[in-house]
Amino acid sequence: MLRDLKERLAAGASAEEMVSSLFEKIKRSQLNAYSNLSEDLALEEARKFDLAPCSGLLAGIPIAIKSSISTRGIETNCSSRILSGYIPPYDAHVIERLKEEGAIIIGKTNMDEFAMGSSTETSCFGPTRNPWDLDRVPGGSSGGSAAAVAAGEAPCALGSDTGGSIRCPASFCGIVGLKPTYGLVSRYGLVSYANSLEQIGPLALNVDDAALVLDVIAGQDLRDSTSVKSEGGYLAGLEGGVEGIVCGVPKEYFGEGVDPLVEKSVWEAISKLEELGASWKMVSLPYTKYALAAYYIIAMSEASSNLARFDGLRYGLRLGPDKDWHSTFSEIRAAGFGPEVKRRILIGTYALSAGYYGRYYLKALKARTLIKEDFERALSAGGADVLVTPTMPFPAFKIGERVEDPLSLYMADVFTVPINLAGVPAISLSCGFARGLPIGLQIIGRHFDEKVVLRTAKAYEDATPYHETVPKEVV
Ligand code: GLN
Image (tube, rainbow, N blue to C red; front, side, top):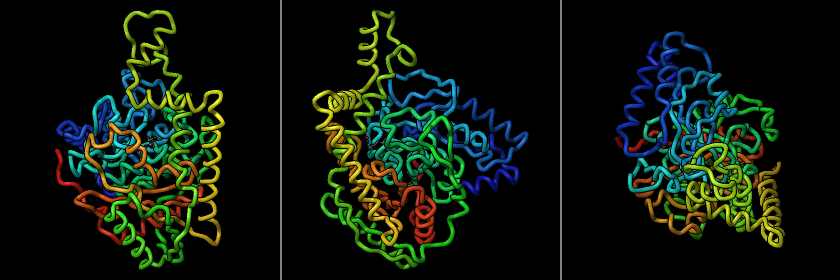
C-alpha cells in the first residue's frame, strides 16, 4: 500500500490531490475518527512536495497521528476537555523523524481520554465508530487511528500502546498494529499515561507498511533515557519465511471467555504457520491470571502521578477568573477530566498511599516481575521463537455495551496487558472474521526481536487473504 503510494508519487502523481481527496473523504465520514485536522499545514506541505519532491522513506505520504503525540502547531488534546485548545510548541521525537523522512501529517485521531480505555468511548468528542459495523466500537484507545486506516481515511497512522491500545483497535478494525519492545521508540513528546508500560507504534494496512513506519520511528533519542539504538532494517528483513520458527501456544490464552470463532481462527492460523514450515508446541505462562490486576494497579498508580501536571494553569482549559490556587486547581480538574480518568486517578492515588502501597503497588510490581519471567522462560533459547495467541478474546462489541461497567471493559485486555508488563514486542494482524467482524492474531516475540515477529506476520499475511478484505464504503 505505502509502496504503491510512493510509486505513484514518484511517477508524478500530485501529493496535493492525494491529501485533498483524503480530507474530502474524512469530512464526509460518519466514523468520527479524527478530533482535529491539520488541513492548511498538510496542504502546504503537499504543495511543497509537488514543487520539489523530497526523498525520504515516507516522502509525500500522508499520516494520521493519535492525539496523545505532540505535534508542533497542531492541537494535541488527548481527547480530553482539560487539554482543549492546547497546541504544543514542540514535536515528539517520532514526529521529527516522520518529518525528516518527508511524511505529511493530516490530523490528530480520536482516542479514549488520556488513552484510558479499550473502545474509544471515553473521548470527550464522543465515540469513534467501527468501519465494519457503525454500531460497534473500533477498539481503543487508538481507535481513531485504526478506524481511519481501515476505512481509507489515512494510509497509515501512529498510535500508542500502554496495555493494548494499538493491538486492540488493530484487531477490531482488521488491520496491522505493532507494539514495539519497550525502549525501541522514544516516548519524548508522548503524553504519559503509564510511562513504564507504553510505546508508540504503527497502525497500517499490511505488515510491510508497519515495518516501514517502524524503520522511521525506531531508535535512540537522548531525551528519553529508556530508548535504545535500533539496528533498523525492519522492512528489509521481512522476507525469509518461517521455516524453522518455533511457535509457542500459551494454554492460558484459550478456553473460558474466548469466543469459539476467535479460537477457531487462531488455531487455523497456527496450522497455516505449520504448513509454511514453522512448528508449534504448547507452552505455559502460569502468572497470566495476575496480569490484569497487576496492570491496572501499576497503570492507575502511574496515571495518578503523571496526570498531576494538568493543573489548569500551564495549558488547556481555563474557567473564567482565577481564584486561589487550590480552588482553581480543583475546579478545572473537576470540569476537565471525564469520569474514567477521575476513577483511575482516585484508585491510583489510593494504591500508592501510605498503608496501602505495600499491599497493592509493591505487590503488583512483584507480580510484574513474575509475568516477565514467564515470557523469558517461554521464549528462552531452545524454547519458542514467538508466541501465537488471540489479540482480543472476542470481536468488536456494541457501542455502549460495556462502557458503564468498567470491570468488563478492563477484562477485554486480558491478552494484551501481559505483553506490556513484560516489555516484549507484539503485533496484531487479521486472521479471519466472526459474524462479519475481523479477528486479530497476536504474535509476540523476545525483547528487541521485532524482525522475527514481523517476518512471521509477513509469512502468514502472504499466505492468507484477510488483509485484502476491506470494509464496504462507509462514507
Ligand atoms: N485498555 C487499557 C487501559 O485502559 C490499555 C490502554 C492503552 O494501551 N493505552 O489501560
